[in-house]
Image 1 (cartoon, rainbow, N blue to C red):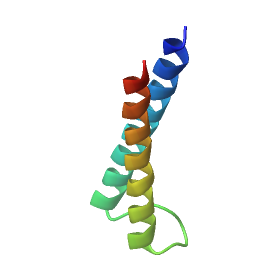
Image 2 (tube, rainbow, N blue to C red; image 1 turned 135 degrees about the vertical axis):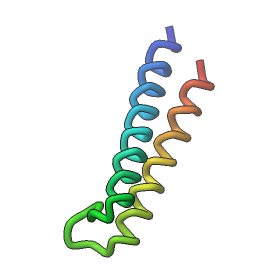
Image 3 (cartoon, rainbow, N blue to C red; image 1 turned 90 degrees about the vertical axis):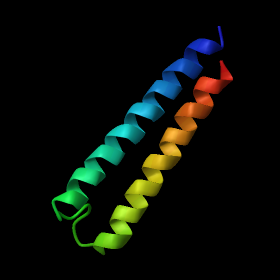
Length: 65
């Protein structure tokens, strides 16, 4: 019974992290701002960091079931 929530959380974290990483990559490739009114390097770095953390959490959740 405990594997259901772990699979759901792992899926959510993984999809969010992959989507954020893809979106950030497209924005950086087109030289568009990742966040308005923020240093472009800082916003891209923070977004990539959040995406990687989310992906790691997703993999960790999948390893728990």
